[in-house]
Image (cartoon, rainbow, N blue to C red; front, side, top):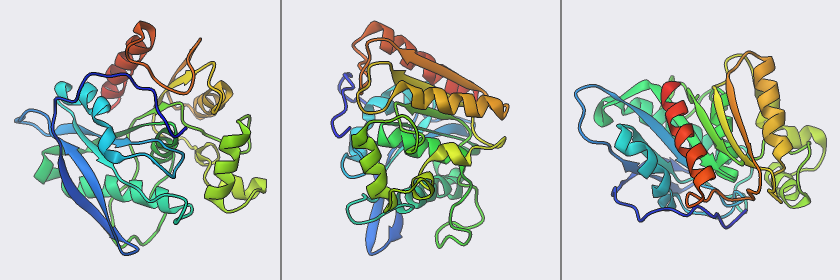
Length: 267
């Protein structure tokens, strides 16, 4: 889960780094990728990196920005706290704060605050999924209160959904560490599956059928749950794909570009 396999061109779009949160004595950052100037407010996407909730870098998400920015979408790649020092729900609080930051600065960035989506891979896919099912976790957030933390549409790239369901021992153990417990009740807390509702965001799933870490049944499980709630999904289980999205693979690249268009149609 720590190493991702996205094979992509060199980043062309240069971001600006901003501080979006000050929490627990830390400054947390966003890399903001702006689209070409527009006379109308644009959509925005929150990009969430993977790495087992303990590694990875928000500055390495330019490959996703390269897919959205040319289509007139502002992208913001989010830094969040890691589970080695901060347990759940710190990670959820951070990505939710990032969404509220964008909404509070909508005029500054010329974005439509009602058209913010989320995408992530691996652990980032899990957090992106959380942005689609939860409203603000903290009822009295210190930063940007009174604004919604929910994403309008989600692209989940092989992110785990339910730590009590069919999943590798390695990822289940990460979930136990994240949740600081191993009972089903404790493992449900960071599992977005149990918080899905009719208000949840439409979700596009890309999941490898040969993923050794996150089973394809995870994406199927969540897609079935959302559809039972009359929430639209687009489920893509890809034969031969493991725990990594290879944009040099024509089949995987086609699904990824289709995902971008699907997300934009739902923002």
